[in-house]
Length: 193
Image (cartoon, rainbow, N blue to C red; front, side, top):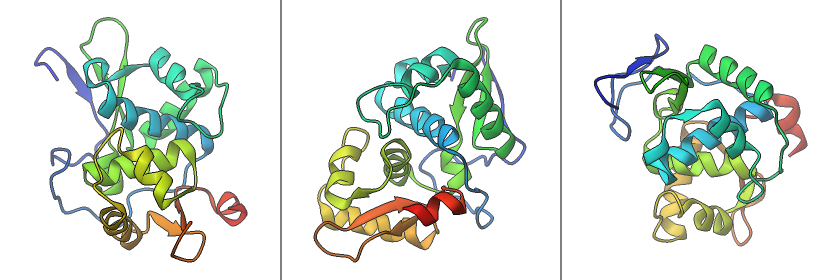
């Protein structure tokens, strides 16, 4: 970020840089709705895949949320839907408004701090936020567009770390076709998985 920009961050934001270890209070996050999950996933994805245009405008986030590829389910959100989700995520400390990029406000994620994850864990969480529950094989393939994961053994280590943080659960027994999901679903949605 340039010196000319000023970031309006939540007061709970850690000073640790992305990917650095930091001491975080246990579980700063809480379950969020489907639009908030999509918006947060888009912010992480675009920060990793198109860093030259990140932070993102409301229009760019809306376009990313409504993409037809790399999304499940496909959504048709309005700018108002996305703005309401951004406001909620800002109130939770998961997203911040960034000023100093011209007249159009831009947004960035605080997923590293909010979930207490590193850059590869953030990529795994973003894929789960964007596509929902997946097999380990699917998750490894999908995540590789953001962060390389050498093999399933490495992914399983990452998932074990996310499970230890309470961010990921197994939906099927371990082994071939093992399906995992994030735990940012509200209780009612989690029960239906």
